[in-house]
Image: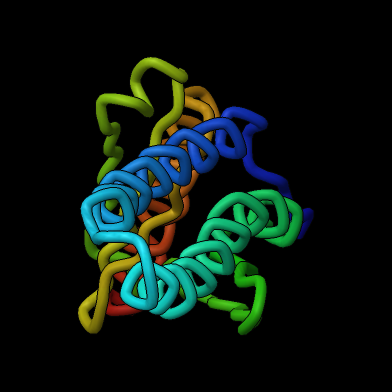
Length: 161
């Protein structure tokens, strides 16, 4: 099985989302600093909130790059494998025979960037494979549906014998 990387638009999408979160954090923190009178209180707010805010902003702006570099997925007729995570690495294997539903989803920003996601539902859980190109998402769903139909036919043939 060959592992694939996400579409380059995924990195742009994650940076846009990070920018929105950064803007919200700054919009909440800056008024607090501006409206507190000068002196010890302002210094205390800057130290207690400013340093964690800078660290959070650094993570928000740096993490998407590493998340993109370390995300890989692949599938064949027997399983789907997804490797992801920056600080904590995960390798998820989903047997094709356990798939119950496949859904394609798109958010508003994803639609603008021509990206799509696939939700894979099994009896025990759901897994989202986000930020694929629309063509890759459709191809994945079609291929997995074909594998599922083939497996169902094999099981039906086994039960007849």
